[in-house]
Amino acid sequence: MSTPEPLSAVDSAWLRMDRPTNLMVICGMMLFKHRLPLEAVKQAVQQRMLCFHRFRQRVAGSGPGARWEYDEAFDLDWHVRHIALPEDGRGGTLEDMVSGLVSTPLDRSRPMWQYHLIDDRQGGSAVLLRIHHCYGDGFALTHVIASMTDEGPRRPHPAPCDLAGPAPSGTTLERVFGPVTQLAGAAVRTAVSAAGLGRDLLAHPLHALGYAAAGADYAQAVATIAGMPPDSPTRFKGPLGAMKRVAWAAPLPLPEVKAVAAALACTVNDVLVACVAGALRRYLLERGDALEQAEVRALVPVNMRPAGPLTDLGNHFGLVFLGLPLGIATPLGRVDEVHRRMAALRGSKQPAVSLAILNAMGMAPGYLNDRLVDALAANASMVISNVHGVEQPRYFAGQRIARQLFWVPQSGGVALGISLLSYAGEVAFGVMADARRIPDPASIARHFNADFETLLLTLLMMPWPAPRRTR
Image 1 (cartoon, rainbow, N blue to C red):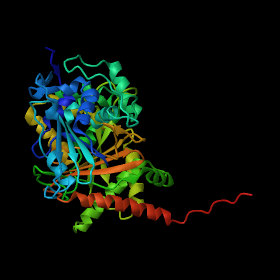
Image 2 (tube, rainbow, N blue to C red):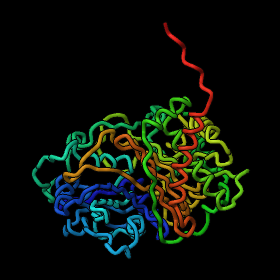
Image 3 (cartoon, one colour):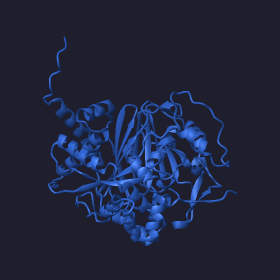
Image 4 (tube, rainbow, N blue to C red):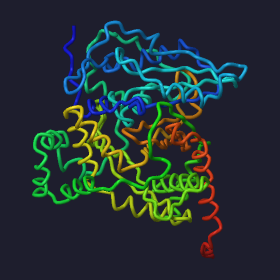
């Protein structure tokens, strides 16, 4: 019998954020043009995922005493399920089926993850993964999924995992995960131990003032977050229900996005976030909402893992509050303003302070934890996550992955999550929304593509200088 492991404070915080109206579950989907056999999917999960001991563990206990323990009755058949869209069309669309699945809580008596192999009506398949946020952040889980894929259809055949075996060593994790491709700024990585800061802030809240001696920017970040007024009361804010709706857009060609970013001397992320702002502006104006004085913020995750190979799961990210320029009418103006605001946040200590707050939430009494969640959520209307995926096509269970998508969870009273993922030369846009507040998220997805097309057309019609003639 193995010794139970305590959850880290941050992992415990994400576990305790679960609410019926907002499940802390990360959802990702791979789309395939051809059918995937169930046994091939199970084999991939057993050989590639279960070698990480965490996925054979469930959470026992609750609150600060929560711990990881092995599920002695682990059942792979429960974790990998096979369903199909009815041929007669009465079961709705793939979006309808996925919406129902992402709204369903995971069983806490088992390891909290599940694969759903879905047969579509066109002869293809979709694989939906649902996994609780307490197992890891999106950055770590992206690497887990990447470790389960191959460069070609011929898959190696490693020996099946010993489900009762020991935890893999750090060397094994480094070999499977490979090098980290997204790094936080060096100042954010090295300036403070966020875990220690979180414990100290919980025990001695006034010590936040003491951090000004080491750097006034930390005190300023604490004050900024603590004194931030709630953002504007748009239709995105209000009472939530238990049902979520998901949608996705046709993928954008990544080379075109990069070309736009180069022409405007900004980052790819600036362009994509500006198009998100444009999509939300179009959505609200379409419904007659006034936006002149609207201040709508997004919570944006920032990876805070140290440089080097990824050697563990868990949650290692902070958050920044990004105001979205919904009041700016022109696409070029929105890109310029997003670029300016992102530059102002670059190097900010908000990620370190927010990670410290998450540490504190993992150890705080239940009533204080809920108040902290609600306070953070009141300052933002959505979560926006942009993940850089693999650049070349990959194969899973012997089949080429045609598209990849994911949906970021929302906490507290946040009703909207926007996810951006690059894969094999394309950028995928996914949206998850509370069905009570935003019953038609497919409209936002459609507007995202339309806003990028408008931005691209605007650039093409600009009076560019003529190229110099050469002799």
